[in-house]
Image (cartoon, rainbow, N blue to C red):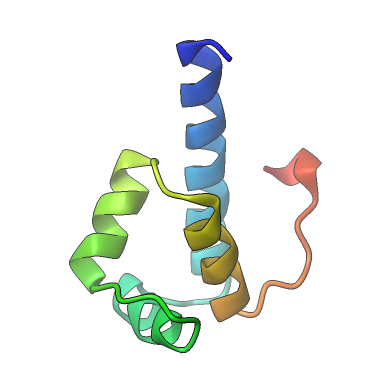
Length: 78
């Protein structure tokens, strides 16, 4: 995969997760708390940094969606 394509996918994942957080009315601080229940040790700052950079593991992405109650992801929306 080219670096440009990788950056494009990272940006798409970042935008999608941010939109879902906004839709669920969940703050970064609240997400960090909810992620504890999924085995993740995050802080508000670490969540903010990951979403700012747009580089995070698929496990973080999926656990975040589960933590906010998102049950479906349509790839055309990402």
